Amino acid sequence: MQRFLLLLIALSLLGCEKFETKKLSSTDIVEEEIKHIDWKNLDSYPSLETCEDITIESNKKQCFENELSKHIFEVLAEHEVSLKDSIREELELKIYISNRGETSLKKVEISAELAEQIPELEDWLNEAVSSLPKIYPAEKRGVPVSSNFKLPLVIQSE
Image (cartoon, rainbow, N blue to C red):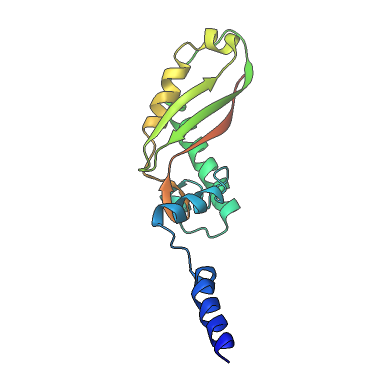
């Protein structure tokens, strides 16, 4: 009986280590969570006030791109251009939107021919992007984040 009691006490003292719980610091939890976040995809895309009532994310993104294109074409229409030849060119604008909704034109992919015919085009595009109405930034897990996106535009004249 004494041996059994001694064995039980020894097992309880030695066995307690196996039942200890590990304490995790908040930084460990955050680092582990960050590893599992998909940073390539956004929970919600940037948006304009006119698109805020749309609930389906793909439709909201389409609305944003359409309104952005419309605004850019309105700014471009304010400038008069005389061309030697008719053109039909596709441009690609790379636009940056900060987590505070501030926009900037990072890059314009434009053909050499179009840049030669309309040398002010890049300045006009910069003007159009900087004069955009209030933009709500993209979100990831409910937090506003900066984002980059490409916007194709077709420029044509007869």
